[in-house]
Length: 195
Ligand SMILES: [Zn+2]
Image 1: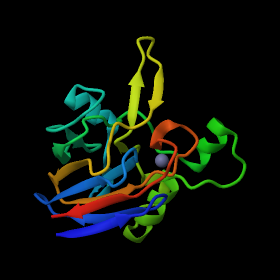
Image 2: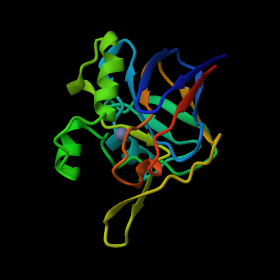
Image 3: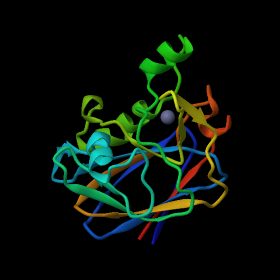
Image 4: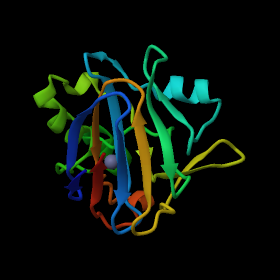
């Protein structure tokens, strides 16, 4: 078993063989982790939120849900989930959206930038990074089809466990979004437990 502490505003990438499992732990609570995955031997085949919504027939997934690739191949399966509230609708926060959504002109750490940094050693560049599975992110869909970002429901020690359904490259963040309730207004750490 290996534990990796992913400090707030940073990320981590790792490879998994089919059948291996890992936990993503919300250390202090209310901290989102953007997760993306790729087929290890061909990263052009990557996580697809659209196929995942379509093939699960759901806007949100929890225990038993499957994260599918761009070619409808199961990449990861959720085997445990102590929260049951995650997002499959939002893109990662990015240098581009902090400018458009919040009017920031100064640089701000972003999940897309963090993912690009940790995936670069694996030969994956920013344009290859898909929209994520936003672990612990709490999105409300209103009756009028609006999207509202709420504070996460996750408490200290809550976790989700995933199992590789194919040999995968996985990357995730401790999201730096501090301009809306996404992370409960405080950026904290995520822990990854492998094995
Ligand atoms: Zn983010």
